[in-house]
Length: 78
Image 1 (cartoon, rainbow, N blue to C red):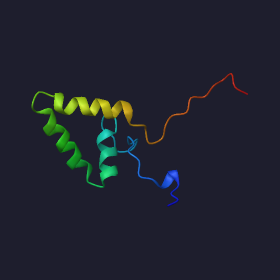
Image 2: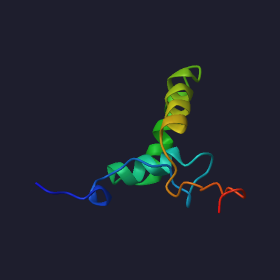
Image 3: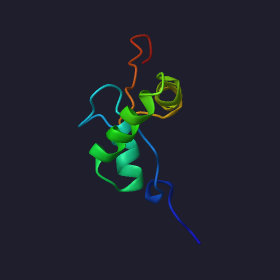
Image 4: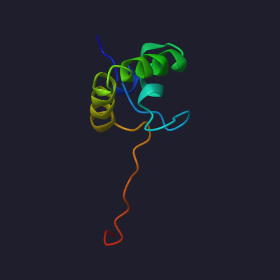
């Protein structure tokens, strides 16, 4: 099976529709569910002291790439 890289389903953080870091929006797009459901699950996981919700969120924030990564311009390159 020959599948191009751009055709594969990827988990990315959203730039549009994000509230904090775009993690919930990205998960909603990846699993094809409404973002409200993902946000309600995230809030529910924050209730028992925060750790069950905040730790996975922070990990996903760090390891998940942005939907449109910002390219740094190098003024010294020609």
